[in-house]
Image 1: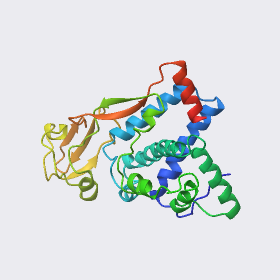
Image 2 (image 1 turned 60 degrees about the horizontal axis):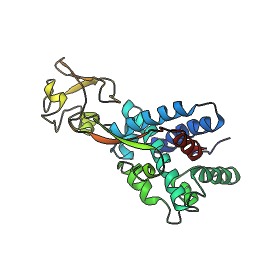
Image 3 (image 1 turned 120 degrees about the vertical axis):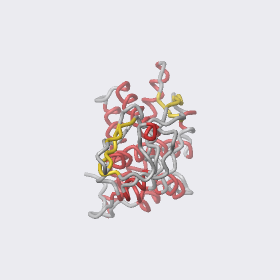
Image 4 (image 1 turned 45 degrees about the vertical axis):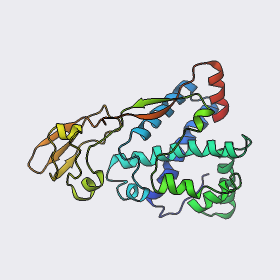
Length: 261
């Protein structure tokens, strides 16, 4: 049994169908004892790195939906954005209710309602159920983080869980991703980027793209219409703060197990 979604549910909803499903698959496995805390922490940290370092992190949801099946980076972003939003929302509900309720209660309510009414999932229905625990609702958060693609802020969670912010290089292509996908043209090329240093130039036409770079250490390539292949490491010049679970004691372990159980 599951929470239904409409037959024509668009790719715009994959933050829910993929991201929340991924979140609960691991959380429930941890609670059931079929996934060790060490493996859970490793999994969470990889996804957090992937989200915060992503070159597409701030692309709006509509654009992600348009290219969901065409570009792997956008397919992955639906998973990791939804997963990170689940972490954020669980913390927000706990904070508002002084740890009396969590995202689990919203999911249980939502499941019970949809089984009784046969109403499919929607952002409006989800917000209605969250409003039972956060009276103001989360329309602003859904708009900011899911629809508009602003970076999800987990700084509040760092005060409640053993989290360390690590400075890491982001994935940085060095040119407009939107123009590349829409028109196949290199635009707004940063002359300090690795792509420029590898030989890419403004206005060149790209006929084929290499694998989407999930992390800045992995190389990718572009094939130009003149047959030239430009290979580069998509690593940004600066760094960004990436939250990572860092349990270092038995107390930390117990905090995490209690939080996610």
